[in-house]
Image 1 (cartoon, rainbow, N blue to C red):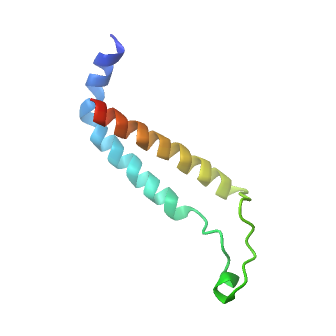
Image 2 (cartoon, rainbow, N blue to C red):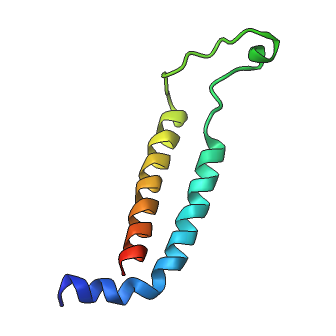
Length: 80
């Protein structure tokens, strides 16, 4: 079984997979920290940009990887 026939077999499942990945991506983007604290509403910001720690770092990298998967699925759907 060659690679092109394998891609032809997954073609019917690509739209459903892309929708599922898009929903996961939306949820992950909404979970991202805003980067500013409540003090920014009053002119003060205590947040330090660029420092991701703990769960924020994991959410960021998971969002990035799901975004890449989404783009790959979109390109596969376009080419098939």
